[in-house]
Length: 179
Image 1 (cartoon, one colour):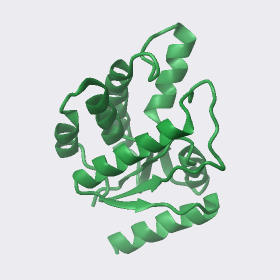
Image 2 (tube, rainbow, N blue to C red; image 1 turned 90 degrees about the vertical axis):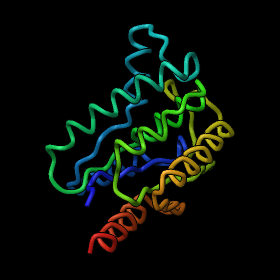
Image 3 (tube, helix red, strand yellow; image 1 turned 180 degrees about the vertical axis):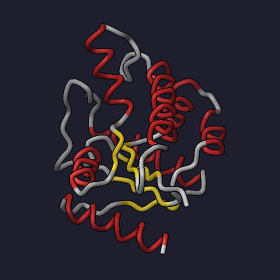
């Protein structure tokens, strides 16, 4: 059974907050590669930013997500990823017209259940690392929903409920699928 679980979906849909709640419950979590790349690029004046060069950003995201998986293999129990390789490969396919998604999907599998946060305008905010508008976030969500479905994952769209209720739902779903 694959214990690497992806939480993906819409930007600003509550993924990072949900991962923090799972971490507080004692589960291993992996921060979103894209956020880390954006922070580094902004600090160093780099151009691998999604609003400057999405293809370069996606390539860096793939490399960082691969490194994250390698590091996570030493952790016990469920490991929750704030996005993952599929997200980065879908972005690269979109930005550069490459066929990365199929290869990544074959080589790097996550738990068969993937949890997606839908677009949620009431909690959506922009910041220095998230400059795109809600419409772009919604487009991204649809693209990811299609990518995970195409790769054969069971996609579970999380309801727009409290963080605790979302965490409970994920843990119940994983317990049922592994039991």
